[in-house]
Length: 384
Image (cartoon, rainbow, N blue to C red):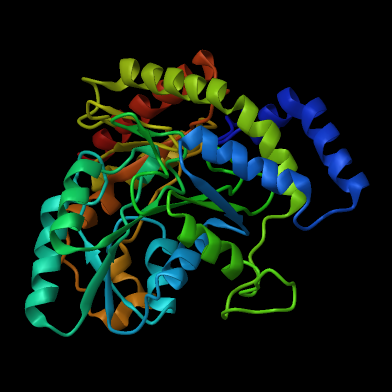
């Protein structure tokens, strides 16, 4: 049985092939492989798309987060608050700067950082007095922007900076503001599987702060100044390749249509699954998800059997994420224990992501949902 693609990058390339091939050939022929004109053009178009004053591209989404923390001087003794239910990069960059990630629970409906638990964690850190609360890194998980209004108020109350992790959220909207602009700075990723992805690694930072943008441009190129071999600060080697910029220019032009197609796919899933499954993704009023993933919940004791049933039917699935960060061995030094963040831990045992991309057809989706419901029924029957 032919398997349904989880993310169909081949179909996307077939549709955009002529423009992508032309753009790549132009970039290759020009031989300006680093900081070619396509990079500056892309930064301008990305900034215009999200409504930011400045866009600074870099080598990947992880570096985008790192560069902002470096520019802000975050380091030992600083506390940075981030959700435990996300990809490791969100907290990894904090620990690598020598700062302390303070893990926060999630809203079980949106999977975004829980503002109530966030404030409790900030108060506790301040009361203990060992660390300086500095930054909040909320994540636009699965494409849904975080609860900006509540988190921004907390940040204002406690004088903290917000670094939005929009790696999955590019294209999402909160109250008319696009993902990437919901903080003092926003970082995104162009990893191929992201809503807007290149054909390798790539990332970008958005900000309205001209001074921050200037420092970021220096930091991404070994801390250089106006002269190539004059270094104002210690930085990194984190530049977006010209060829990737050329590819992204083509894909950015197609992105608004692809975003509409993602909404259509999500709506078809909702019509098929709401009222049948105990939990399907919810998008609060005033927000728009870019649907980086379509993630449902199934009982923990039925998940493995359901996955195997779907696999046998040619339907791939993924678990984002099978383990919370506060329980990962890499963060053992920070003392996380099972039961510390109950809502996130429960989610990690129940989440299941279904195929999601702009070119998923109605017939393919019916095959997915039919196989899902059959698999769940079979797993429940076997469990007795």
